[in-house]
Structures are given as C-alpha cells and as structure tokens.
Image (cartoon, rainbow, N blue to C red):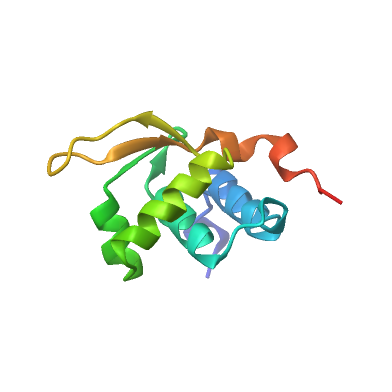
Length: 113
C-alpha cells in the first residue's frame, strides 16, 4: 500500500479521539459509574462544535437502558458539570442540545486526592 493511498485522520477526528481517551482515563475523579460514561459516550458521538443534540429515546435505544436510568444519568452528568443543557428539547419533536465543552476544561480532570 503506497503512502498516497493511506487515509490520514483529520484534526477533528484526532481531537475527538484524544478527548474520548482523556475522559475514559480520568473518569474516576467524578465518582461516576459505567452508565454515566455510556450516556456521555452516546452524547459525545453526536457532538459537533461542542454541542450534542440527541433525544433521550435515542440514548435509551442505543444503550438498551431503562428511561429512568438514562434520565438520572443525564441529571448526574449535569450536576457534576460534565455536560450542560444548552437548549431544552420538546417532547416528540427534537432532542435536547447538550454542551459538551465543559468536558474539555482541565480543572475537571485534576486529580482529586
């Protein structure tokens, strides 16, 4: 395979992978559980320009989780300032838009010893 035929990752993709790895590696300081990481990952998968618009039903279907579990996980992520609600969605029409930019702040990742 020649060098010309190899696809290079875009900077956007590289940055997304870097952020994802950083969150997974530093998840414990928040004291959150696996469901929180799973919900965050679904939101992050839909992220564009630090915003993620996705309905709870998409998260529920993707994870195969109970709606109350997903609701509680989202509320906890907001409470811990891992994400924030940018624009509230309307039931049955469009999902809520979450701001994922908070995740990139270094003070969130400081080790809490």
